[in-house]
Length: 263
Image (cartoon, rainbow, N blue to C red; front, side, top):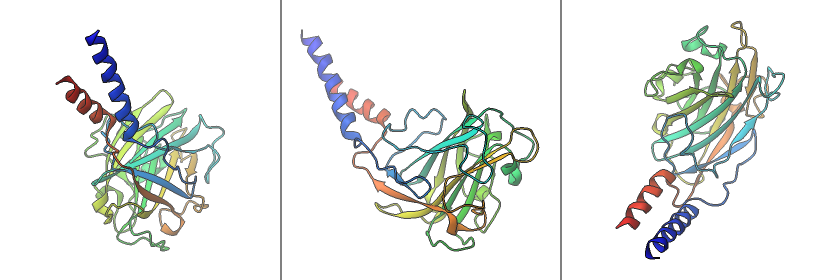
């Protein structure tokens, strides 16, 4: 009887602490306008998404949202989510892609192949040209099987170019297409994390179906109607950092709880 009571107590305690770890819901913001980014949450770059809290919102960019629409969502569409800790902005992508192309264009030209793009304006100045805290970071599917600590990056525009940002990225193939977990160092863009801080932000997807020129271009920001984010930060949307109390990795929280209850 005592053993059964102990097991029930452990399960109740674990459930209670997990319930306190995050609120029931995080405001998702508005598609194409603003994304609310929860912090502090630390992510392990492994492409599995199992340490992303379930309440973190995902924005879906459908096949027809961009300057080069795709026929349907399975051909090209994507979802992204963001969290942050004191050192990194983490951005995850789930890319639906029925024809995976890689290796035709690399380095600064990887935008012509299957790739995602993250845009950051650290000061949110909304200028019409890039300054020292504006960047395009392009992450190609050619990083599948590569070194996440030293990925191959594009985004060779402006003063602070993608390959020089210190961005880490883990890229994997999936049954629906491919996926990315990226860690962008906040200090690169001079971002001092605090509740309510707003930065300029955008995401894109490049989709190549036939080893020729890029076939589809999908864009999150509703202001970027002509695919000009690569030179004009004023068309970015926004990302707002929102502090979530007790927001820690569920994996770490479970280990802590179990260790305490075993004694």
